[in-house]
Structures are given as structure tokens and as C-alpha cells.
Image 1 (cartoon, rainbow, N blue to C red):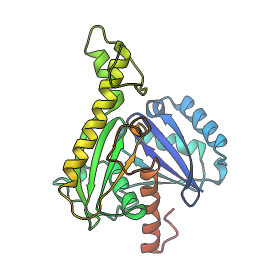
Image 2 (image 1 turned 135 degrees about the vertical axis):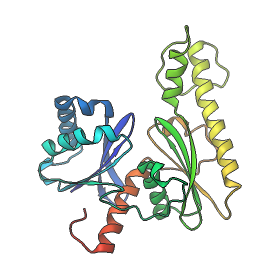
Image 3 (image 1 turned 90 degrees about the horizontal axis):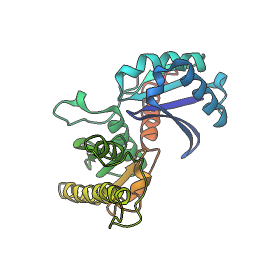
Image 4 (image 1 turned 180 degrees about the vertical axis):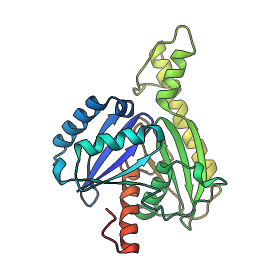
Amino acid sequence: MVIFIDVGNTNTTFAVNKGGDCYRSWDIPTKLIASVENFRRKLLSAARKAGVDACLVRAVVICSVVPKAEPQLKKNIKSVFPAAKEYMFGKDIPVPIKNKYHYPQQVGSDRLANALGVRYCYSCPALVVDAGTAITIDVISAKAEYLGGIIAPGIGMSLSGLHEKTALLPKLTAGRPSDILGKDTRASMLSGVFYGFSFMIDGLVKSLKNRLKGKIVVVGTGGMIDYLQDFCKEIDVYDPFLTIKGIEIACKLAKNKEKQQSYP
């Protein structure tokens, strides 16, 4: 059994493929990685609930945008899944996609995983809207090249900023507004964030579409994408496992190309 791990700034997602497009996953706050015993306990408990036998996990593949969390994460994983070999996406597992960023090393590994996932699971040209700690919109050409994209503050970050940078606005967690016209402070804040972000995403997607030719698929993913599902009109497909699929695809391609059993 292989566990695919997506380490984000807010949450770390663990996922196993149960066959085809069927995944079982669980999230643990990334900040808990440093809390060794607490993290291990949560990881083992969540794995059991997902039907994962720790002794049968032979490999873990890590895609991370939080470098400082990686050493401790590997130690924690080894203690929970002692038989598992560790692989880093983008290092041990190559990413077979042409990266046309001016500085390719600056592109987050999760964005490349999304590009790979959309190439093999959908079609190109494509746009990927990933709503997590930040909101990214990435562009993949008809030739399946990663062209670049857009980075904007995320929903949680914006709600926190409104509270932290003002005297009277309350601290809120994400929630869908019932109407664009807020009748109290909470409703007004949620309206501003959710409608504001949905209009921003739709506008940016329309502008980026003008740079591409042919039928363009727009795929939404990320931990906060569910909140935007009823608001964004330009997103065609919602796929919460797109990043995980990209990681898994990279593993399969590496194994097929090298014909080595050393790959997961």
C-alpha cells in the first residue's frame, strides 16, 4: 500500500487509492507536525479509521510546500509506518512536465502536481484553480506545458486579516453567506470574502482563457474549493483529489519509464 501526502501550509492531506478514482483521505493540521506524540497519535488513529493497516504501508510519497516541516514529518511517518520507504515528489519522483516559469524552482510542487493531474485526468489546454491557504490559478498549454499562473491570498487568510488589522471586526471561520447583501457584520464579511473571491476568480479565469486557444477545461481543487462551488461560474469541474492524482501519476510514469521496482 502507498500513501500519498500533500503537505500544505494549513493542512497535511494523507490519501490512499482504493481503486480507480476512489480515494480515502484524512487531514491533519500541518502545525501539529512539530507536536510529535500528538501528531503520531492523530495519524495512527486516522489511518485506522480509513482502513489502513500501518504494517502494510510499503511507501509514502510526499509533496510539500513547507520545507521546514519535512524532517520531522519523515520521523513521524517512520514511527507510524515502519516498513514504508519515503519518496519526495519532485526530487525522488521526477515531474514529467515542461516548466516554463522564468525561475522553475520557484513553482510549488503542489502546482506541478495539479498540472500533471489535469493533463492525464482531463485535457489540455487547462486552468487549475486551487483554493487553499492561498488561491492559485495555473495555466497548462495545449502541449501540456506549465506556463505560469496567479497567486492571491486565500479565504482564511483574508478573514484573519480583516480581524487582525481592524479594531472591531470579529474573528470568523469560513462559512457561506446567504446573500450578497450583508445585514450584520458577520454576513457582510462573509459576503465580501466569498462573493469577492468568486468574482475575482471568474474574472481572472476569463482573462487567462483569452491567452489560450481551443476548448479550455477549468478544474477547481483545494481545501476551500467546496465553499466557492456555488459562486464561481467559470469552473467546469471540481476535483478535491487533483493534487493527489498528480502525485500518483508521477509515480506510475516514473516506474513505467525506468521499469524499476524501487519506485512506489
